[in-house]
Amino acid sequence: MPEVACLGDVNLDILMYMDKLPELGSESLASRLELRPGGAAANVAVALSRLGVHVGFIGAIGADVIGRIVKEDLEVEGVDTGLLQVLKEDYTGLAIIAVTGGERTMLGYRGANRRLHPEFINPKYFEKSRLLFISGYSLLEEPQKSAALKALDIARKRGSLIAVDISEPLAIMGVRKIGEMLGRIDYAFMNKREATLLAGENMKELTRRLAEVAVVKKGSAGAELFYSELYAEAPAFKIEVVDTTGAGDAFDAGFIYGVLRGLEIDECLFLANAVAAWKCRGRGSRHLPTLEELKRFLKENGLKKLALKLGQKS
Image 1 (cartoon, rainbow, N blue to C red):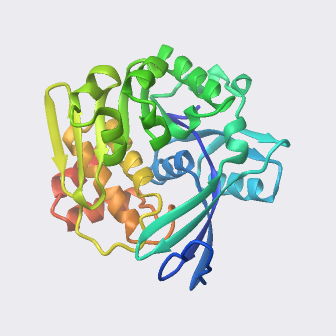
Image 2 (cartoon, one colour):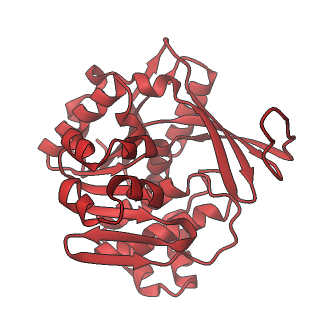
Image 3 (spheres, rainbow, N blue to C red):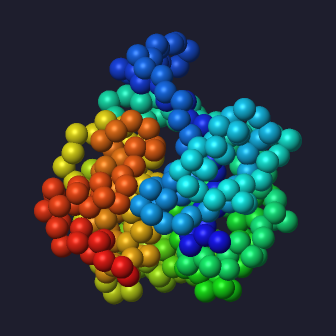
């Protein structure tokens, strides 16, 4: 059974690289096209697997060609697919991503992702789980929402840590409603806009009502976290940005890996920024480092002590 379970979406990403987005009603030609498996929770699962974590993915795909592609990709990456449900009533999720100057604009169809059934969640899957990661999009539509909450309840009762990435649609609900739905979780990841939607300038509201640790991703401005009375921040790494697709997912995986390795909370923040920076140096959401590549990147950027800690068993 996996050490970490990731519940959420898996998609096929269609990436189109272009100079600029077309105006409404017009068209624009892409200079490059790539087809890559993606989806927030699937990206986190693959990133953790690359770092050597035994991880499983919980989600749903359609009984179609795209579904076979993304399932095979997860398995090639070493991700357990024992709780990947195959459904005939909808297509596998699809995302069309326009990449302009390193930034992305996305159109998505969630498809089978949102149809994950609660009955499919097997409690035995969490017997050895140390952490459950849930993508916020999983908490928007039924029956996937009920499946996610069932998994959360099982994992919590078994003593697993709970980490949730707050999507913008979820953030619009407000911190009180999310807190009532989830109960108190251990880690909440969000970007700056989502944090503002949730708490305005009162970030302590997040740690009081929602999570033990609230982590805010700020892109090129780095990241910050709020934990009880502790505040920590970490600058972004100076890199040449190629593509930001999946950077937030890579960040989440880096932070979770730090937690699993028993790092200090501020060290987890630096590690998260490092994995996100590595991802942004290449195309697509799966430009992710192995553990040795991550350690080398940390050393090259003046974080030798942190790199050495990753070479030690927790």
